[in-house]
Length: 242
Image 1 (cartoon, rainbow, N blue to C red):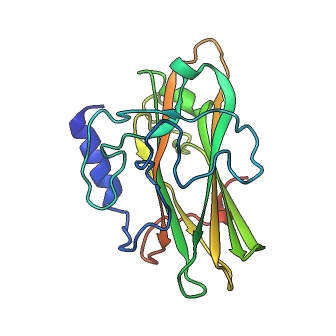
Image 2: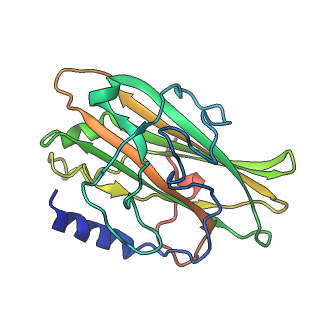
């Protein structure tokens, strides 16, 4: 993908994202505070949530998009030293994953909804993008709402890589390979919430099969803050496929 096309892609994505002015509730959401690979300052790994397949050690994926882009306050993969993920060429063909957790204060009036955003990217050898319908990576997110040690509630999402659902769109070039995807999840803390626990599982589903090409996938730039009601396409937990 050419630099010009990448810039246009990000402009089109960011034009529909309402960027909150509040500070990120998460510490080291972009992993840029890390001094060594896999340090994950501010995070716990593995996650403090009973995910399955989470024994994989997160790998640093440098220069995921090839160039640096400056998009203002929320900058996907912008010059950061640490973007974590998986590459089959170095990590092998596997079914595994890594998971992370972080707890933060909920300093807003009761009933204030939150939005969780992050960047997720996958790329595959040219001409092999159609395999992203079958194998690759998946993101699982669990959020719990706490008052002291009491859990008031929890929500969960399972995020599959976005591919066209129209039956007419089946060509090998429409699988979003090489693009960065920004899920926006709507969180609804119940009354009494004092803390929010975020748990993320990066699931790798890449068993070897003849014809499969190597892939690289990564996540970066987690942001949690108050939701803007005008922000489009916020996904509720009830809308996540099960």
